[in-house]
Amino acid sequence: MAINLIASLVLVMRNFFLLIFYPYKTMRKISLEKDYYQLLTIFGLVFLYFKFIYFLRNNSYPATLIYILFIFNFLLTTCFFYFLSKVFEKKLNWKSFIFTFSYSLFPTLIWFLSTSILYVFLPPPRTFSLLGKGFSIFFVAYSLSLLIWKFILFYLAIRFSSKQNFFRIIYMIILYLTWFIPYSVILYQFKLFRIPFI
Amino acid sequence: MKTINIRLKKKLNEVFFIESNDLGNDYLTIYFKKITAYFKVIPFAYVIPFAFLISIIMYFLLGRLLIRLVTILQYGY
Image (cartoon, rainbow over the protein chains, first blue to last red):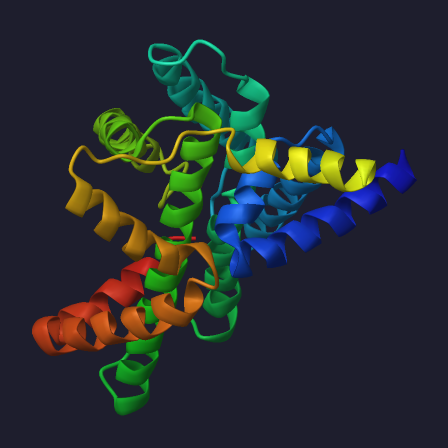
């Protein structure tokens, strides 16, 4: 068990760097992945992140509750794309969706983790001084880069799992956003997530 | 020779397990493939300069609003 987990951690790290340099090829390989320990590693890292921010937030819900909600959101997302893709293609595997969507969590995890660390060292609000403006430009560029990377990985995850063409994937994403944005607002109202972790 | 054949077959199966994207128009498909090629290998080489350019443009367009946006984002973790 321990050896399997260590081996999976190495594989997850390897895939993480490959997703930076070769997202297309790597995501294609991930869609054929069968090693469930890799999922355990990724979801373990996410759990550690939720534990970490629990100590930063005031009047926060327990980390485990937020984590369970994240798992629910994740499963809801994968099921949505899986069943929607099933309409067009019968031979699909839900496992492929789980693997690719898990790996597409990396940009999210990096952004949330770096933002929470920055919150400690450079707490908001940002000032209108030269340094404040410089940092703001840098932070927006950094966030935008990760957002684009996230979109690339998210698109590739759907592409290799659902085997659909570009237009169908875009339609599916639009359909997904039509319910996910109001759903995120509800989560925000209940102070569960400020920005949805997906 | 047999090993090479098996490896080649495995690679071909991996590459061709999904159909190539067809946007319905030849020109559109060609340009789509040309553009997406940049995102397939080291996308950050294009993404980072693009993101900096966009954020500088946003700063000139939005001014102080951008700094407020960053403050909101920093609370968003």
